[in-house]
Length: 72
Image 1 (cartoon, helix red, strand yellow):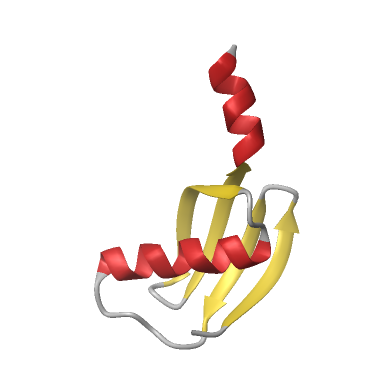
Image 2 (spheres, rainbow, N blue to C red):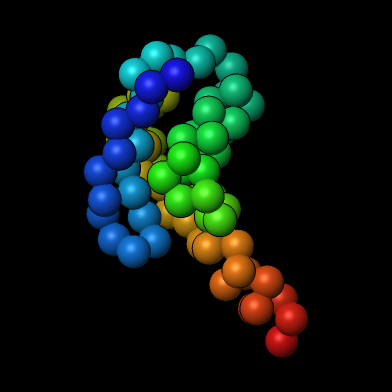
């Protein structure tokens, strides 16, 4: 699977899938994999589809930031 990334802000990125999945669960897994290639320690917090299912704006949190928030 190939991806195209476009930086939007420190906590969001636009990801375009080159190939398209058929099942919604599969699409979510593919975007998670694409995000992990962009930022390995990140977890998706929101997916806004710009052109379903091919293009999405992904909001994410860094895993270490979430651990610190949960520890408080």
